[in-house]
Image (cartoon, helix red, strand yellow):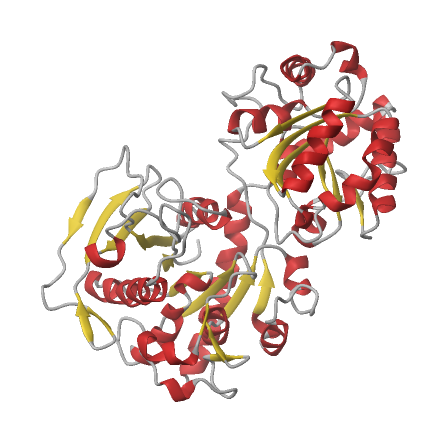
Length: 498
């Protein structure tokens, strides 16, 4: 057995305690999967004022009174609490009254960003490093996530460079959302603990005349990853690099992609409590039962039970390809498909889909908003799941769909390209249908191919079996993360050689 790797996983959000986006799902599942394969992993996250700790007992960690975080020449004491997940993974919460005593993660109750958001990030990043020291942890790897925790890398490599508990640690930086980078003016560098004159092109702190936290994380990390191999290549281009393509290109030798996993306990058609009929790949009758039940709930006649049902769940915005869907929506209906859509987003797309449902009540049902139970029911009942995203770093819905024998129709980008294999009727390989272009006609052609294959019972059954046998477990992803940790450690050790 490989030796254990001591890992500190630093994140700004994690389920079940606090969630805004997909980072929380990763941070809730990946550390537990890592712990199961020999990575002794602890998690550090903020204790927000309204953090959800229902069902967990928190024990306060003894912090010496003279320990503090310095921000703008002011000392800020901090507190820490710990609890343990059922898997045994330890979670440490870091907080104080001034920065984290309030409700909200990124915004206040009115949806406005906090005026002291940078100070909050500095407090948490410095506090996380101080907590590692206080706990006496000697981590092999410190794994930081997105711009909110990127300053941890700068503090470990510069501010605390001579600390015995930290200087041997490898740094791994995960980019979950490249669009949000944490950009501030050069005058804010002292608040971060660095001289303002370090904001120039030869320093890791400067990016287009501003301070960019994500660039800091990329620069100081030994290894950098994003959430799919294809997206890791795409972000090296101007089209997908969000202004950091040159930085990522400079560091491309340490950039890789690892596809996220899914929670196979939550998304399991054999046990899912949110669907009326359970089923497995060996006993699929329940899938048809779910389809009939969903049509009834949607107000669509059961005469459509033998017509292909296409489901869509997600944000109704251009990034998700709704602008590609709209021009050919009538054509897709004319192919004989039934549509059930759940989501919210841009008003133009909400209004468009609502209008189409009124015009075609026998074939189209639309629910504006989000309903977790309905999301599960659409995933379980549909024959196809449509995801024509313009870009998709990883995507989870296509993996949920395949777990339920629902065949994805996707645009070949990011994680969609890495998880959906084009169906090949001649040899029975593949799990779905895809297209590369951004023209509505490209999408329509993929849907047409899918429906033609669906009409052939043997092809349909083969596709379902292929989809339901895919391994999208977090353990698979965790093994890739462990390999990245080992590479990061090798780089760190080589850097420390005289």
